[in-house]
Amino acid sequence: MNAITIGFIVWPFLTGFLIFILPKIDRYLAIITAITSLAYGLYLFSQPSLSLKLLDNFGVTLLVDELSGYFILTNALVTAAVTLYCWQTDKTAFFYGQLIILHGSLNAAFVCTDFVSLYVALEVSGIAGCLLVAYPRNDRSIWVALRYLFVSNIAMLFYLVGVVLVYQAHHSFSFEGLRGAPPEAIALIFMGLLTKGGVFVSGLWLPMTHSESETPVSAMLSGVVVKAGVFPLVRCALILDEVNPIVRFFGLSTAILGVCYAVFEKDTKRMLAFHTVSQLGFILAAPPVGGFYTLTHGLVKSSLFMLAGALPSRNFKELQSKPIDTSLWVALVVAAFSISGFPLLSGFGAKVLTMKNLLPWQDWAMNLVAVGTAISFAKFIFLPHKTQEEAKPLRVGFWLGVLLLIGGLIVANVVYYEAYNLLNIIKAVAVIGVGWLAYWLIFRRTAIKLPRMFEQFEDLLGVMTLISILLFWVAVSSGWS
Image 1 (tube, helix red, strand yellow):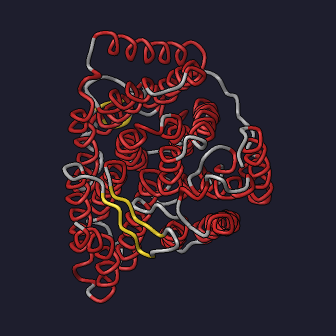
Image 2: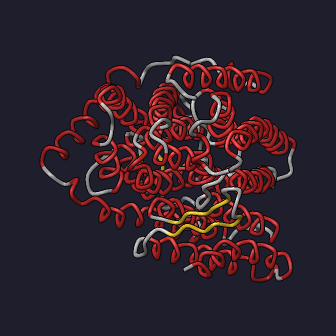
């Protein structure tokens, strides 16, 4: 098991560099790497947890377990779908090489239980992600990529200072070192991770980055990359009881913030990006079951970005006046049903399981967020459509990628089939029905535009500082010492 795990971590980096040497088989190396990760992720569900100590006296360790398995599965399926999506395009070996290096760094992040190894993995993923965002090499993409890299690096500088404080307190870089560390350590580390993961106000770099990137890059970013910042927060919440309520608080806050913006957003890709902010809240709001929600969200959000990229316009008002092709609409409806929590798709089981693991003070607000989710995705569900025989057919790779993700949403039902009882089904349908009714009566004609001040580049650093102060106050008020 030890050798398999080390090989699993090293393999994507090896194939990533091989792609530059053997560019003629870049797609094949990429898909093989994704399949290897898929096999390893499934393998973890049949094995007991394994901890690997890399440095004896510094708490530098890796942990592979069921939680890691869910995140690795998400990474594998999304990477495979993105590779299939790009198969018949003119993407170069550089694109596939960076995609697989990004894939490998995310896998590494999903098995880390120490702050130093995590720092390295997150920094590599940030650089690879930046290069993918900048891949078109036009002025807009380069600016968005540099903005993403700047915010990421500043966040990780805050994080690194917090790591030094943890080591100073315990002479260990282990996640457990947060216990007994000074409050400013948790404030700085969590501020870095919240920003990296696109959570709450400090994560509002996310909508522009995800909506302005190319479609496959948007799918990768929203489907799996932001999970690298969320994973350690979930892991810390499971390891340390003192951290659990802080993580849950920010989960609730980001779920509310993201859905409020998504409900009023008129741009398809920005709406999906804001919903990524919101859905990350579901993962953090119930850490014990965050892995399953990560899997379902990663699959559905990646498929939605791919489908949105094939629409004739990004503007919902224009889409409402011009029917889209029925085949595209059907795929959109299936994905929208899953993220709304409709039965027969794994989004239903993930939402039921998450709601069962909420604390009483979270329950009412998260149910309102679920209604807001139904309102948001009613925009897709009620788009006009018709069969357009004269339309240019979409690539085979596009449909293979989308079908892989949607198929995963169906198969993943086996994880929590206990969700299928009459009470849960009635509640899910009622929540969606209320959301659709609210959409038709109120939000369909509403033209409110929420401010974007916190998304501005010059304000992002100030927001990070404010969030770190808030985290320090939360840590102090909760008796952290």
